Length: 110
Length: 111
Image (cartoon, rainbow over all chains, first blue to last red; front, side, top):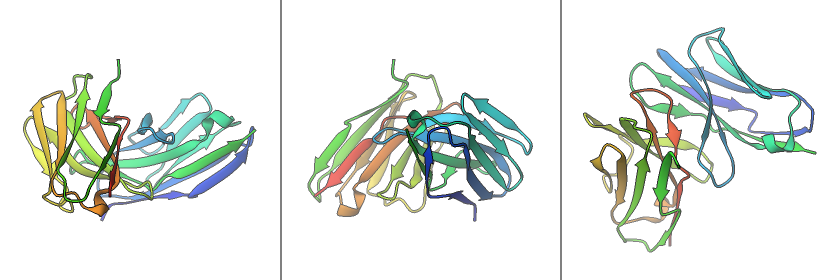
C-alpha cells in the first residue's frame, strides 16, 4: 500500500535557523510529489511539484528536493511568517488522487 | 477573484440532519475533489470527479454523495449526520491529473 511519512511531526526554530523537513514515501509508480503549506483555519496552499529524482525547485527561502525514496523541504534563514504546517503528498500513475502525509508543524520564533 | 470557494465556512448541526456544502472553482479545471481533514489534521480523499467519471474512496459511507450541476461546481451532500462526521471538509480542483488547488474549507460540527 502507498505510504507517505513526514518527519518531524513538529519543529521549532529560531528566526534565521535553517533546517529541513522530510517526506519519505513508498508508492508504485510515482507521478509527482507535491508540497503544500497550510496556515491555521485555511486550505492547503500549493508550493512545489517534483516529478523525478534529482529534481530541485526553489521559492524564496524554500527549496524542495527529490530522491527515489524521499523529499526534503529545506528552509533557509526562516522568518516567523514561515510558521505553518507543511504537507507532502504523492500522486501515482494509477489514479489522480493524492495521498497526503500527516504534515510537519513548523514554528519560527523571532 | 477566489479560485476555489466553499460555502458555508462554518456549519453547526444536530445529529441525524441532512446538510450540503457547496464548492465552486473559476479556474476552468475539469476535475474536482472532496477531502476530509480530521482532528489530527490528516487530509484524506473522499471523491474525485470529472465529467466522465466519479471515483469514490471505498471507506466513505454512502451517506455522503457528491453532486455536480456543471463543470465548475461540486457539492457535497451528507445524509443522517453522525458525530464522527465532524471535521473540516476541503474542496479542490485540477486540470486533468495536475496540481490540485484547494478551497478554504468548511468546518462541520455535529452535536
